[in-house]
Length: 256
Image 1 (cartoon, helix red, strand yellow):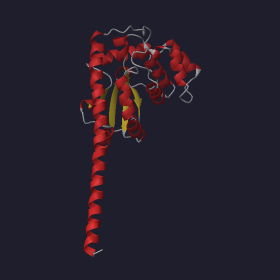
Image 2: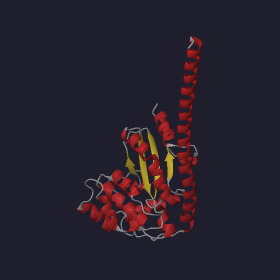
Image 3: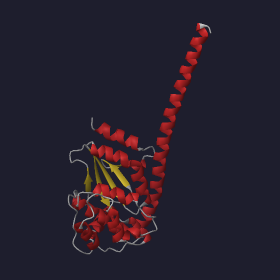
Image 4: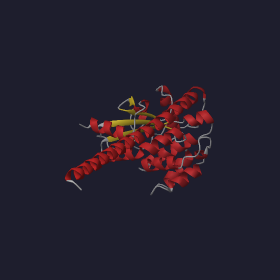
């Protein structure tokens, strides 16, 4: 084989390798955008559902007792459950409903990134709990799950139980979370949570009135659906190109 032909073949292989790498990068970007668009699309539908729930659905408030905020709750009227360090430079505010399918989609796609950013001290997430689905479809599953999550906050295991609730979310039309026994059984998936104190908090609805007050704040804020996700006050899910990677870039850029 002549030296010229040898060099030509090397050049061809190099071009092929470069094209393959370029295609792999393009495919990776496309997959990320598809995931982001899928999440935004589902969340857009949730916004419509949320409008119906907020404007026409009437949930029965069972929180008639005193408003008892969970341990460590912060913000106006102590309605935010914080995850992450107080000194984090960026804050993500999440309004959610444990019966909401779109909230589960958001959690599934973004959870690894949120955990990474909060664990590294770059991000602080403030969770606000609402009960839109109770109002839209009836039942008390949103309320009871939110109360149980607040009880888990009392025990210092909010994030772990929060994740368990979404991993075991029933169908939207199934009010399974209304059953306190089911919520207590799910607590068994979190180390150290299933205690007499947690059980009493769940069965007594200790934080029911607090959940209702949080829901009222959601309505007063003019939000149209769950999840509503605000990064330093800006609704990031209105960006159809938003992905976990893009969110991470935004958070890390804010650290500089």
